[in-house]
Image 1 (cartoon, rainbow, N blue to C red):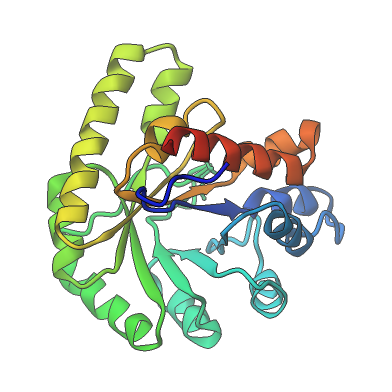
Image 2: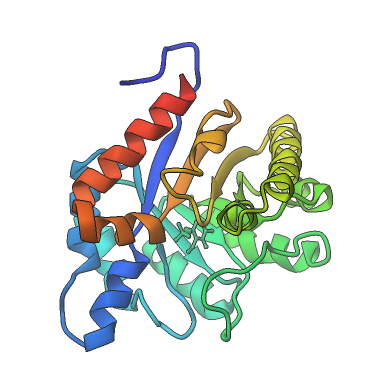
Length: 252
Ligand code: PXP
């Protein structure tokens, strides 16, 4: 099922970090995140996302090199705004670079970037990436100040953090989840109005993807942990295909 021509298309970016988490748990060469990317590609993913963290807890440098070499889909390279990561991105020139805040002690990316307070530094940081032809995306929360700052410093894309909404739903806090969703919807519309391409992701599952896939302004969803977890039961290809099906159904 594909959405009617009148609705703008929405891409599914599959984040393969946690295939590497599983591999690294035993120090083996398998499961290989590049193989996972190829399976996701075959199953209908529109892009592959990989986060090279400073501590290399899942994806490692060689994974990025092999992904660039072996996959036909665009790579969305997630990274912190550090000199080391900037050098790596400039060496590989992936299709997109998504800048995320990173704390060593966190289990996953907890919040959005503070773009407004660090606008000058981030503007300087992203300039060479833009010149190298990478689409720069900033991972932010629904704060209007961050949207305005992202647009001002020349980001092409903002990706909204959907993790808090998903957590609230999981915790059974339906009213708070609805309030969070309303804030995200407002910020998504502001971002599109400011000329930014809108992506969203974090914590999305078969049950939480609908409200975001339904929004015309959202052009890409990046989904990882749930898909890799679900692949234990369904297989990665069927899990990706089912996510794609649910996104298309919500878009209709
Ligand atoms: N988008 C961004 C910017 C992220 O940092 C992550 C997590 O690495 C994701 C999307 C995917 O989140 P999840 O693995 O919870 O689906």
